[in-house]
Length: 163
Length: 319
Image (tube, rainbow over all chains, first blue to last red; front, side, top):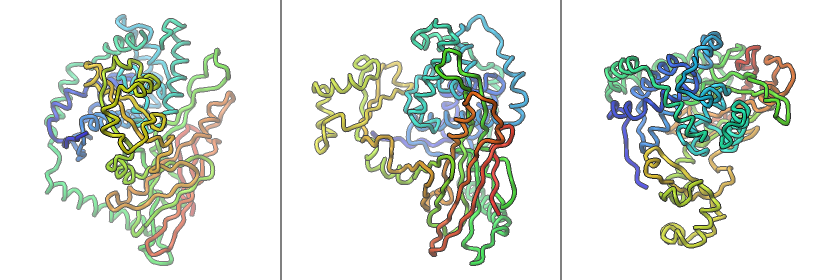
């Protein structure tokens, strides 16, 4: 399969248009907070603009952006400020009539499960690719997804048997 | 049904349009990456700065056989080599690379009692120094992971990691079922692939690893990309995991050649146990780092890793 050389400084607007929703969603799934997700999004694109990475393919670029978004939100989650304010922030997820209990059940999962569930069920990424992105063994991803599903089934009281 | 519902729900998580517009404008007005000239200046400036820092740090480690044979231990979050912490002998520092924590208790229906446990972040440990041929790391308690990036790249280029990739209609194997693929393979459905890629290889599909992938662009078209790979049983030649790993020097990677990862599996198991936990009492680890220099000499340093009461990873290079 041929590869195309794609430089990071070309078509920034196109890259932004193509990926900002995906990256914002990912950051939100980790931080559960719009303002933090916007901060993460900004940081990811700042890094992208400053990066000299040459991408072999669009898939490579996407993987780089997803990985950077995960790392940026990890940094935010582990910052002392976030830890001190997190209990208050968690209460900021206000119920929305448009969303079902599925959304709240996923958002209520521990972060290590939440991100896997989001990548698997929303971004439709295969387990192997999730493992690659999160630097985890495929078996670990499978185990965590299994545990996450078990938690979800409990939270959803058996309403979604296909989870 | 669950997947569809989650997608529908999550589609309501829409970023604030005004904020996004402002952010987009701000980013599009960011100066572009430095030109080559500017970049070289940047590299030169960074090099000067690192030499200054390096010389200050190396002052602490001046070995009896000359300043060339020395190294500094550094730690940083995965993929963020620019945020490295230089470790100075005797000083205990908090590493910005990970926090261990206990989450919710397992649901009552679980077979066992316990808690979710989590280590946020991946700790990368490396060394900085000149004339180093390789660095051996060994740890006493947990597990180290080293990936030889150059070997991986070479194997990729030589086609040793993927024998072939091709797209098929998703409707043919809707659930990415390997058994279904195997049946179709044996029934002669992929004869053209066999002819093209497997003339000098076994055509017994059980000898290989099959992966199904799908990119965003393939979803509307309903396609899978199938990759047929040699089956390394999860033990790739370019990866080492265990209590002892050795990182080789590659000129194209410089000091990044020596990067290894440490993960606290045993500590996580303890945090999961259904009993009170004092994070500061978790086992941590001792990592023995030996640099092998090009002149045949070696130098060893010992790094102690521990957790504080909040679960933050602390490091101390022993004097």
